[in-house]
Image (cartoon, rainbow, N blue to C red):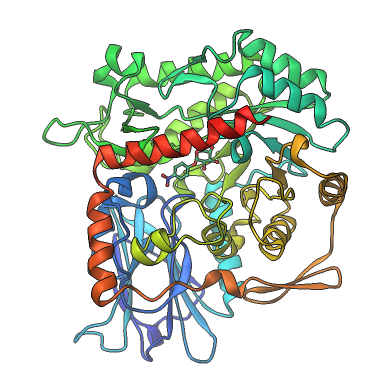
Length: 524
Ligand code: 9PG
């Protein structure tokens, strides 16, 4: 369907497989919406961005299918901003769709195009002030995908951003005790308890088992939370060895890569395979049976990668259906947080969604940002940038901006950056931290308490500026992207990007990180 902007009187919906809207004046910015939680989402220029590196991470960081498209594009929704500040938004009201911006001889002033990978889908078009058009899009999505918002998001202590994989029973039990009367509702155990990705049983560091772990948390008067990544597995797992036929393959019969993590390549389960579905249902029930009722399911993008499935259906629709099954198996009384998830397909299926990359002790890493042009890797600036551009999802579900930091013993972020994270969490109304009580000074401990109890009045003053009670916070410093590298820097960048695709290089980096973590754990 071809339209010129003057022909349509937005807001409107249209049904089509493909829709092109020719603009009658050239825009100044394009809003690109990343595929999954960690993918870059931001208002940027109109030119395509350099391809982020290393490429081995594409399946786990972006929608790899569109990474090399010559036109800037994003998942489900795109928008352009004109010189007068008005915005034209084109958004799919269905899964399996993308929006592109093109400027060429046929449309010299630019064109927004929507394309569906499935059949005809409904498209929503709106024009006007940016807040209003995104809010209306969210409304329309809510009507079709459903809204789930149990009142008040729980306040979470999560083990990841302090101990990472170096968790064990002893340190967690001690930490749970020392958190004392801090007002957390959930204590959530993250990555590090399992035998391996694929084998979701307690490893040797948890000799008392998973029941005991949940029991310990509940004895402190809180809900027990657990992280797992049910849709991926490593080749060394028993699951992969015993059920290689459950894993997603391409049309040539080769296993589809789900990226690389934990020093190993990752593979994706075929979420339409009936045996996989039964296994997932049993796993969700097992986790509940252990006593956990806050579930952070991670690396979920694996359910929506391109491949040849047992049931031939659009990849995101297949993933959404799998979420529905897992949700039902875990029970409606569980709190379900999705992470590393394609955004649209998860709306209405979960209580909360991670809407940005991981935070880290770094504000921005020169290597990742400037050389690799990668805004998905853990980093506080990356996290804030994408979250600020996805606040429009708030009416649909609880939006998780990732954790906030308070302590300074093991954290070198500047106070100003820690404060930005905390303020963003207040705006999202989703509060979490991984800070160890063992590291906090008495003043920091009280800061955590005050933060967990805070409920400021929030007013948005402009795209990136907010007022929290009588304080003004400006997130503009977090949204900019560095200039793409040129000349010698570009050569160096290309070399690094190439190097980053080698397994042995990634294993060396992991070995270095693990060594630092072991030292940290030994110091506790
Ligand atoms: C546990 C972690 C934490 C964290 C999740 C997820 O390579 N990557 O781009 C990449 C990004 C994020 C990530 C892992 C890898 O972290 O977001 O909260 O649960 O897994 O392993």
